[in-house]
Image (cartoon, rainbow, N blue to C red; front, top):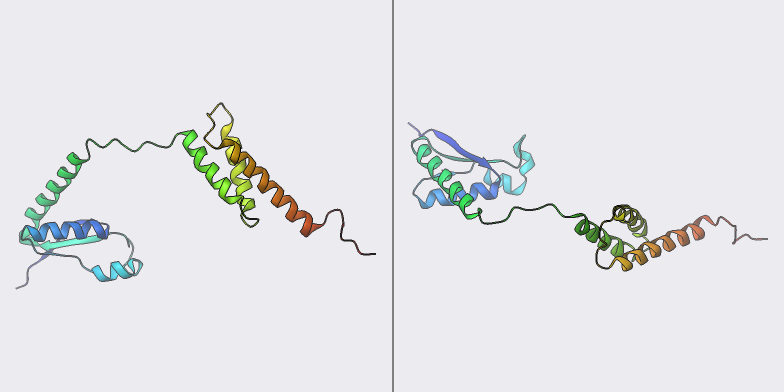
Length: 166
């Protein structure tokens, strides 16, 4: 008679592989069904493509679950001293946006994006937010993007009919 298999953990493939190695070091035979398929094309395996099961024999399920729980507790203790991730401040967000504006204003093709980000940048400055570093350079980049767009429109649309042939 065959041994019944039990799912002891479900999660991303990298985490399940880590836990599989940990369980096998402890002498528990673990198996990941569809491991190769998940690695090559995770979306072919069904409804939740980014979740993978870790399977062990029914006899080892209780011990495996205890080991996984102990692993989680150790990881949580290790991460206790790490400060939590804080959302970026408005000045930090504007600094990133300013970098996008400056890079976007380099080419005529990306100038519309630079102008769009420039409007967001200028809108974010209202309300007394401290100006990020390289603020003047960002303003110059917004101006350059406006010149690129205006020049392109003049050349393509020719609103004043400068190229009129008589």
